[in-house]
Image (cartoon, rainbow, N blue to C red; front, side, top):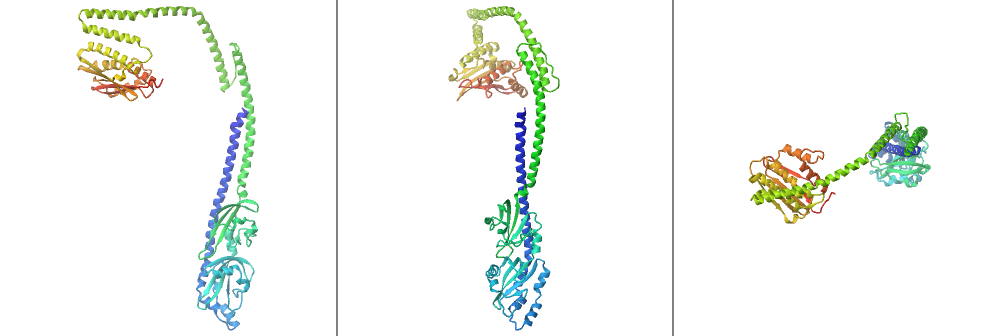
Length: 578
């Protein structure tokens, strides 16, 4: 019982627990992935909104005539330069108006200008910087890059755009620094490790302070993933199995863009699932330990009672029928003990009956001998009847009563065939002859009120059929169909061969059967227990079904006051069902 408990309970519990733990872990990972994807999409939208203002400002400065005059003018004195710088307030106005913008830088080759915090002459080192080269090759499109300011030497994300002054045929580079605080304020709200990376894999903002300004290589990210586009990837980050969600960010009118990368450790996500798994495992082990103790206690209690029952059964097997067993309780074992006592009592009573039966054995043998003698004597009666009928027929023939003589001959012939009927099949020809005798006798009775016709294919005469399978149908047609009919009645018997079956029909033009009675008759054909109604029809139907199968049997069609047709089919291949 303990083994069955382990197989039936312990193993399924372990399997279910393992399955549920895997599903819980999978669900936690899927939820984290869905949340990360949604967070990244939301972060992308907020970042696009933040970068919209600097992009719009750069577009307006692209056509700013005052800026064109400031940076392309040929100054003759320092005073003119300082005064022009002080008069141009738009950079400061944009800084004050948009919190997303931290400062402006403008690089242009104009020897008459002075370098300050905003306007600068591009040095050879600056002109070789990748961001400067990309801006000059971008033909007016915006580029984004994480660069170091020439004045503060602080790195941050900048919008870089080449501005062409067509009137003077000069070109400058506009740099708009994006507020790192604003970017990090957006990223800091993310639950997972999230960062914004420029096209050079520089981290421009992250929700961890020690990541901003570093490269993706510094966080030991798989080099194959550094240049991957939008999607979800599995990777090892700092030696930990992690999920990485990447979303591309391409601001309008930009030559390059950025990527938003969200990283979360699988271990951190399934931590709660693992904790629940360990808790569930502890509960399962404790429950199984208690269950094993309970099963052991109850199994010992049950086995001891079964052992008592087994000992008493062995005593009965050895012939001791005087014992009784008392096991208290209302469970199955107690009920089994009571049934055992009842069985032993029944065996004792049966043994007594057998003893009484043995005492009457000689008397029974004597009676059986007398019965055999009576059966031998009863065989003389049919022969006496046939001899008497033959004497009557000869006397009627000698006196010129040909009709009576013929009828008595038919009756004798029919009775002899009935007595010869056994359980084996007979040729259809014998059944037809019996029908002919029966109908001739009925014609003697009804006279001109009865006519009959037989249409039997010669090829069907030798087909074996069950005995007395057709005569009850003809008899039923005469008695129930024509007996109460005042007009001339006709019986039509048709035997037709249809491929591998024999179609037999008995049709009368009698009083017919009304619908309710027909339904009751068809229902009674299937009722084996019915011994009062339509015995002949039911007998024929049941024998057809038992001999050939459920698909065979009688089919009755009738119209009230018109005709009744009883038909059935027999397979030519012989018995199919039996």
